[in-house]
Image (cartoon, rainbow, N blue to C red; front, side, top):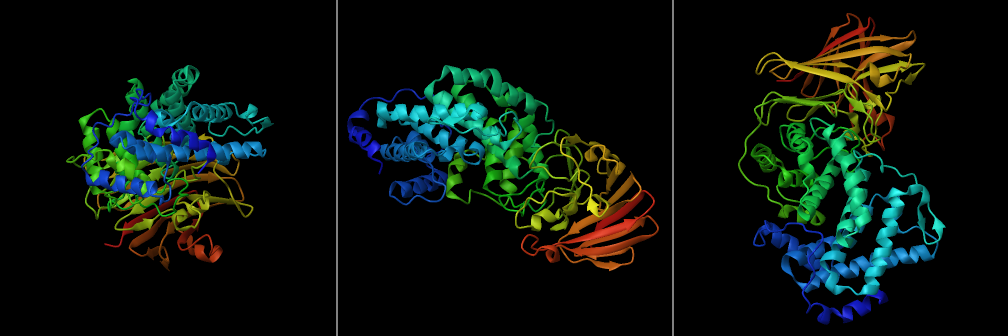
Length: 561
């Protein structure tokens, strides 16, 4: 136990006799059912920490939150001890001329760390003394100043400038962490300067960005895009504390509910693997997806959005949080009822993602197709890529079979791969491709046409590339490409598959997938074994390479039914 905490603990009996001051962090907890199984499970998890057995990921926020629900003083005592340990460790690092942990990885964890401090500072004020609160305040203020003034950042008397990564990008997961640190501390400390910065700069930039993202979701993809669970939690915090409803400023929240419903495959176990999948490469539905939808549902204004969120939560494989550090979010109401969307397709224009299926039954065929902005570092060179699922992955990015989950190049995606002088021509970040979507009447064939030329940023090797994807009611997909390249540049139609392909002339079978080359007339078809390239990184998976000439490809993909 830190010696700095002893005076506060000695004062506990006296301080708790006084009525606590009204909380500036005004989260509305009235709807939480303290008799529910979810509450008992959460309480047991926190009680284990009180007894000296904290599980992985336990935070002072968990203890402070339970104190607010139960008014049991033991939880505040624990929260205060944990926060003071954080501050004491930071003070020690600064005294030794080092950066404290809160500055690690470009301040990525500043949100939860300062958020825990702020929640405890506010809700457990009666268990702290003034000297302690002064130390916490100094540490929190310096952290925020360093985040928003990266070139002038310092700890103690030493300069520790950093890049400022994410501070000017409201679509980046780092921004949500910085916003969490700023918002929670501004509310807890009632800081006029920080509250003013939030209202005049940070939050307007956020709502403007979200308002320009029709269709919801994230341009970072579906891996890092789950960070929007934290964004929606901040919307709720701000609404409950100030009365200002950021979620009502645009349709992004309601659109994101629909985005995730359509991005989930028919078996309800996985989702479209778009962008980096750093937590785990296989795109399995996890606690984070459940939390994102619970947070969105808690903010949704219309019955249709809430019902759709409830319907999705009832169907996904994760019926409750798997890990203790997420138990708290199961206290949010999942609701009941709801029904499947009438539409079988969804185009999120702002992120350039199209999802479609043959039905809402578990054995339906499902596709995803990408053509839109490529502007984020965690996004991939997947402009023009498609995914195909039916009872399992039939055609999918090889990235999901990698150890890292962050293979971004065109080689691992189902695109045309352009090769010049033996090297793959890369798609360029900062570009925007275009897609149009039509359907032949209700339940008819879905047509998506994409101009993917911009993805190559004007490089001479790729003069033009247009891809058309036709998705029939029986689940058959026909992919047609028209392209023009410079002399010496090859265009290879590639499909990544989970099972070893069996090639028979112009036809290929890979598990349940049947592939047939319709054009050009003369092609070579080969199989590429990813595991043979790098067994440590590529755990399994194959790629079908189809190469011909003439500026056109047309390939049919069907399930083995």
